[in-house]
Image (cartoon, rainbow, N blue to C red; front, side, top):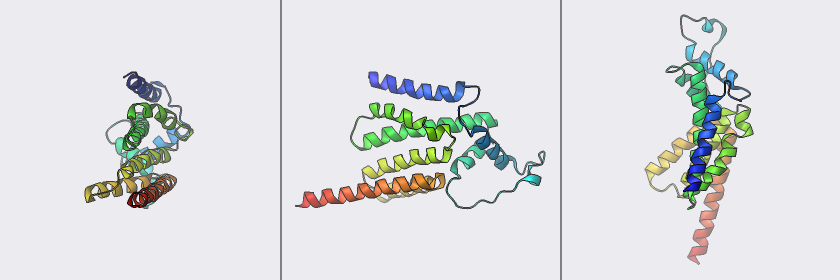
Length: 196
């Protein structure tokens, strides 16, 4: 019970860093907010952004958080949208660690303590938002793979999650693919040993 309180306290402290600071301690924060603002308001006739910018979308990695942030700007001001995205990044990493440890048959309460250093890592501080979200989603995919992809709804969910990881960041996608490959090899070897 004490571990749960500590875990929730650390999670709340992480979110407090995002919302209480006058300026989030992220190197690229305003660059992300500004580029998402341009994406969200490019066609706004009251602004002249279309004279200076154009967008060429391609199905490439490293685009997910910019689109998410631009979408948030339709319902809230730019800084609130940015801080909401930061909260999603922090929360996704905490959730990923809990899911992964539970998938491995461990109690998820202590795993949240491990999530803190990853949620507020150097990647987060430097503004690598796509990589941070991709890593969290990749860990969720690994947690799903720990139990096997079994029936088709679970496989479809895994495919959708893998697609989301790809559009977040290619390195996070490769990380998840390698871990899932190792999981598959270990599971195959366990089945072989069990058959002997």
